[in-house]
Length: 282
Image (tube, rainbow, N blue to C red):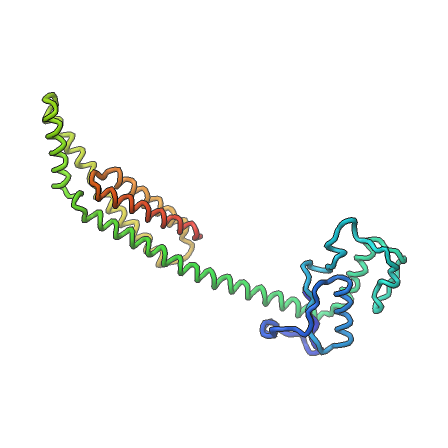
């Protein structure tokens, strides 16, 4: 609950509440004492501003927060009640009567202009909070975009290294296969040379990572366009991260060269870092 009593001048607008920076008196707790203090401040010091702070939306105080064994008063309410609003019920009151009494005091004592000021303060605070949240999210988005862009560049560099790796050149693949076939023929004369030649061609075609490199380049280009365009791109980037991981796995499985295998493992690591950052996007 927040109640503000201004001077006798018209109620402040939202900008005035934001720029005020302070009030004259801060009352902590909207219990019996806090409500009474607010009334006397308004009557005796009409030129002062004050705010009542309480965690509850309406009244507060220990009667509200200390529930056990229930709201009650063992005091004479004629004595305990407010002088500016004398108690009209029985001297020993029940819980509902006491709380109704406090609600009546609040309703009668809170002027319409005070309610407008309080509402303006709440609205101003809400707008300020939303603006800060939006600014924070924009900043986080910019930083995250930079991180994702850096990871994509690393993926592109690794793909270029794989493209230029000597081990993926046709002559290198052919040399390895020829060496392996020669070892098999030397070990036994039962192998059919023609059959070995066909198997060698099949192995060579499977060892080619041209398609994987092309798809990696395509995925990188798509990701760069999405990041540049902005907006809610989290799901699409997550899908592309899965595709990148699939290509990295295929590259590793096809590799029969140490350098290409190391590039593939490094690529998998960077793709995983990229995927983890994507989880922070909408």
